[in-house]
Image 1 (cartoon, rainbow, N blue to C red):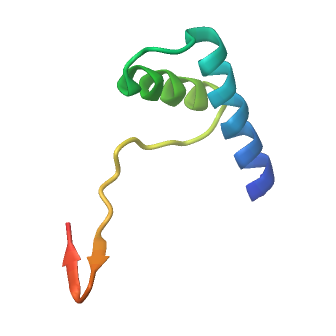
Image 2 (cartoon, rainbow, N blue to C red; image 1 turned 45 degrees about the horizontal axis):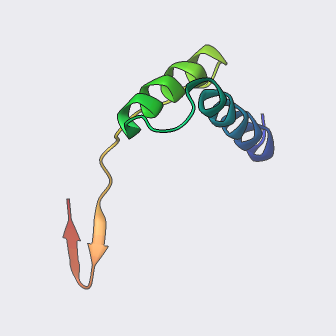
Length: 61
């Protein structure tokens, strides 16, 4: 699967979650539902993965 196919699948899942849930919920609700939907559609996904940030000359965790 190439990048365009993956991004198309992700966007499609995000739109579907939004259509089903509507607006007004906490971000964490959408995050959990999107995570579930992406896994159900066969994608390997991780949530809240720590990433280092580089600011000026310092690496900030």
